[in-house]
Length: 556
Figure 1 (cartoon, rainbow, N blue to C red):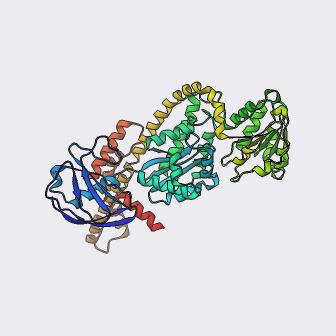
Figure 2 (cartoon, one colour):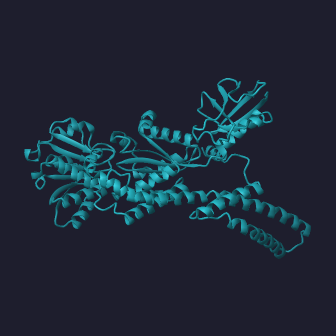
Figure 3 (cartoon, one colour):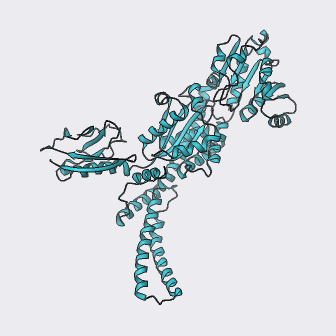
């Protein structure tokens, strides 16, 4: 086999032009080497059945896998080459086919790149946390990356997860990870050490489990469902919160509601706030539960729940520090039998000096308590154990890590709540199994809906194809009729052509529409789509991926 040819291919917007020179007179199924200039290399090897499916796309028996890579770019183009056709196929065609198979026919993937309480310590999660007010900006920046089409951010005290629709899994993950590093200052290597990656159905199932409360530290807790709802609310009208991602989150809300309605997963469930109260009471002597002086800093959702759970445990008096008094007044009105004393933020340290237990739950991005503040506070009495407790359920943390080094001070954060929920592990597993069946069913429905979206481009292309023919034939007809025809006649001919085209397209269009709820109908719909693409040559010559990347670059 001896071929000399030039080729050019576009990857991530960078144009790569290389002269391919082959000087080999024979073909071997064990190995074929192509001689290339500078830092580019090509090697062909028989495929291995256990090779990653993502790379070896068409593993037909007896074929050869060809890889092209460069030292400066971790690009791998994998293709299947039939030995019987090698002699009649030029190297240019082989590599062009490789690029088409790998980059233009790859379906855009739903990917989640995340860190949670199960994989990363709070010290890292707080650095990567994105405040709710910044979610739209983050979505816009993520969708500005070359291989990201849609995006959403779910950032809570227990997790920081980024959901994207990626044109290429490998490049999409790489770009998002680098973006996370750039915005947080955490090195890529550290993020990779603690992150988890899930793709397509696994990503879908994960979000459904999150929404149902199965992935929470406290099984079945309801706050996470409210946070998933907030992602949808904040994402409305945001460019980049597109059809796939918004559909995924809306379906996750449905799953969360259904799991809580049809199972007893929420029965007896506690929230992060209630677990924080339980932890504090576990650390206090039982005799001091009624007399311990309680301080709650922050009267938002988490703070309000802390107050309610303290009341449920018998607390009748507490001090609440908040920026304004409106929320505290509303809580006081709701809990009329409890003495709730409001103090503004400037009085925070004074209040802490008079408290035995301090709960913090604010959205402050900097610590409210540092070593120098706490070391000067007066000691607490021996009746409460002789140590002041700080229970910090905020991410980023409100209490600096250095505070825990002080004597007579004990600091707990959200990661320490595992101690509270460890006792009911068997009950958690049983309830999770009940909910998992619902999640599996809903995951199949969502994937079917997403599959049905594949026909949308074909519908648009078929209509555009028919419209081009209609306009061309209409122009021919009108030119033959002369320039003196009336507007009424011209309009009648135009309406006639539209009517004919619409009636002819009605049948094919009906067979391309599917709601995704019936797997048999969906399968037939996709077969019809492929048949129409072949019959009318609707497949575009330019790679869809390449078109999207070029469009992104033209906007920069």
